[in-house]
Amino acid sequence: MTENAPVDPTSTEAWKQLAGIADGFTPDLRGWFDEDASRAEKYTFQAADLTVDLSKGLLTDEILGHLLELAKSVDVAGRYQAMISGEHINVTEDRAVLHTALRRPRDTTGLVPAAPFTVDGENVDDAVHATLDKVYAFAEKVRSGEWTGVTGKRIETVVNIGIGGSDLGPVMVYEALKPYVQAGLEARFVSNIDPSDVYEKTADLDPETTLFIVASKTFGTLETLTNARLAREWLWKQLAAAGALDDTDEARKSAVAKHFVAVSTALDKVAAFGIDPENAFGFWDWVGGRYSVDSAIGTSVVIAIGPDNWREFLAGFHAVDEHMRTTPLEQNVPVLMGLLNVWYSNFLGAQSHAVLPYAQYLHRFPAYLQQLTMESNGKSVRWDGSPATTDTGEIFWGEPGTNGQHAFYQLIHQGTRLIPADFITVANPAHPLKDETGDGSTVEAGQDVHNLFLANFFAQTKALAFGKTADEVRAEGTKESVVPAREFSGNRPTASILAPALTPSVVGQLIALYEHIVFTEGTIWGIDSFDQWGVELGKQLALQIAPAVDGDEAALESQDSSTKSLIAKYLELRD
Ligand code: F6P
Image (cartoon, rainbow, N blue to C red):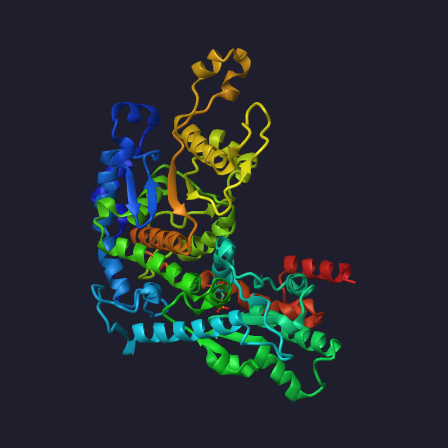
């Protein structure tokens, strides 16, 4: 343990002041905007290319002042500096936490710490760039067709096999950057141990043009290793069926060498699986799984979008890292957003947090954020092992707008719960289509559809903030008995995030923004945001229970009565 006991945030003066304000708090966004013509400008901030408007949040100068004091009391800035300096702030695993080192540019002039950046005796900058070079060289070979399958055909489909951080990041970024994918190349992602996943993802593939990337930090994850074996079996069978594989171990080995590569920190286990360590890309134990999308774990995406776009992606992360490192707390976007989230969840009773991308290509962003935020901050003990002194771990969820509008927005607008929501969008769409005909009434012929889309973004945040009073509803001639049902309370907080376009850099910026929001919240709560012991028990039990599910009587007998009867029912139903 290198870290001291965390400051108990509830013992700080700032916390007491905030609790006092929260007691009987009656937000008034209409009034606040009326009183202060500069509110929008005052609470709009810039982080790299991201314009972030927090003015429709439930904050005042007084609240913000206390939140900033809270950040100082727990020393958010100092802990961030400790993190990027390589201190072992992941105390329960005794590890440094250095995902920010994955995107430090080669030229580190002006960075802190300056090159060479060594951690535990290892030159991190050199190691990161050597691996990037290896990934880039491999990606170029696949993209150019120089790397071929065992029958000499170029690769057309890359299948990433991984789960958690070894899946959610790559799939989210691949989907976000689809317009940048090289024509003739496709990536697919297998994660679930449900055999339907690997079956469906491979069913229509040509084995001769398919490359599997087994992505697993530990190379010991049950789901990933099982799926990797299923994929290897599929490859051998399909190649044999196509007359492209002799029935010899040597031929099978050659097929694996040309159709399987790996990304892992455990190169010995990669070799044991039969993948040539020459075709393996490493990373390090100081990169957490959910913080690893910008490491070699993203190899599938590097192949799809190419090294130049990947460099831009990393530069986007780095721009926000530098914003986090150098910007005073008062203007520091991840810190401000993290503080507001604490205000909503710890003081105003928010139980969850919606993330609503108004960008179809970001449709996997909420799922990605669920691991980033909840695996990081879903903890009940602090980094010194003592119990958390307050609620931790926001529940993140969401869907892209406008789909969400027609599903769950009802509850956000009129439900009894406070649900802070982050609205994310871009000014320039990848496909600026026009509705050439329109409908002759609400939609003009030639309507720019992205404008219409964005009108929804602006309308939703406006409706949530300002609502509609009973008098306004009455003024529309609404029957009195229906007025309450048609009233909107307003004062439902949103943050609006606007970027110029969904470029590789902007996607990197968005990820880094949320990484540092998570960091800020975790630091306030005093928890280790970088371990994940809560996923272990279920994993262990699954292995213990597996024999019972396979019909081992003794193993079945040793289960609790509920589990035993459920397994018995399953076995009865199973053909
Ligand atoms: O679910 C737990 C977890 O350890 C995640 O933190 C991680 O991203 C995922 O499993 C996959 O782990 P690995 O990359 O080692 O296969």
